[in-house]
Length: 100
Image (cartoon, rainbow, N blue to C red):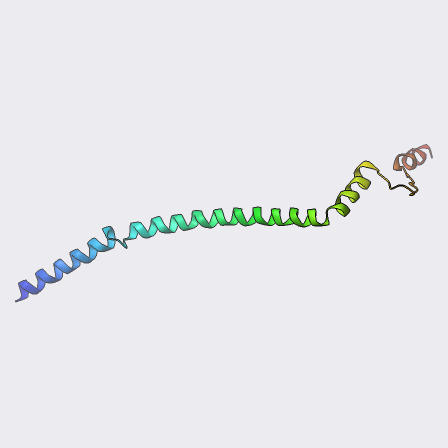
């Protein structure tokens, strides 16, 4: 009776260990799934950043004309018709302070 019980328990231990290490829900498969999960999370973060940039570009395009006009005024010195443009140069201020 004891030998039969011992044989049964050893067999059960062997089957459980086999499933733990080599079965469908084994430790190695769990590690593979966790690695895939980490990779997918990194990809999702990159895609979220890209989506935020695209959303900002869309908002910029919606504002569009105002943003383009502001950039043209700042960077290119453009003015509308009927406006008076005053140019104040900091270079002249520096030259006059150097002469003193």
